[in-house]
Length: 203
Image 1 (cartoon, rainbow, N blue to C red):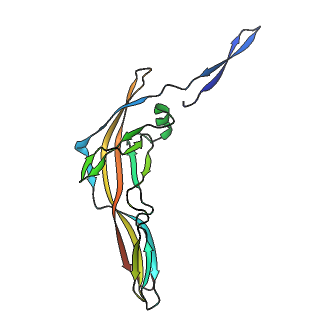
Image 2 (tube, helix red, strand yellow):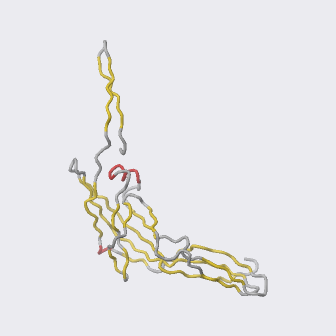
Image 3 (cartoon, rainbow, N blue to C red):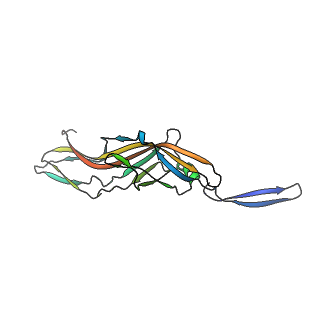
């Protein structure tokens, strides 16, 4: 457990009984010894798009209409740990590793190759979001011609990869060792696209 526990023990016989209070300190936690990625099974997924905004504009005037979209305002890098053998429970990892989960370095893509820089995430938290380097206030003007009806869809172009991992842990007090294994998924915006689909009057 991640907190101290008070236990009352009753001792005695038929003539006398007494309670003894014990305070049990929380268990000594495991520590991460190493993280190993299976680079031979590192896979880059290309061509994925994520819709971040959609709006229908019906310009009923003869003059063009211009409005502003922000392709990266809600964008983040998404990280997910996946283990097909278990139902992921963050509380389980906190019992092993402590209420403040330790951080590990994850790969970044540089020139379409995995590189371990200093990007870190909390191990044990199934889904996480990281900030991206793009300006979230970047604005793009979208113009609709007069008497035109369009559905405007804004997409992020994603850079995605997956790689199997093994996290080796040990308990310095008991010398017990264990291994967590699974697959790491990363998805990061690298560009944007804007589509303007023509709509009929009845759409």
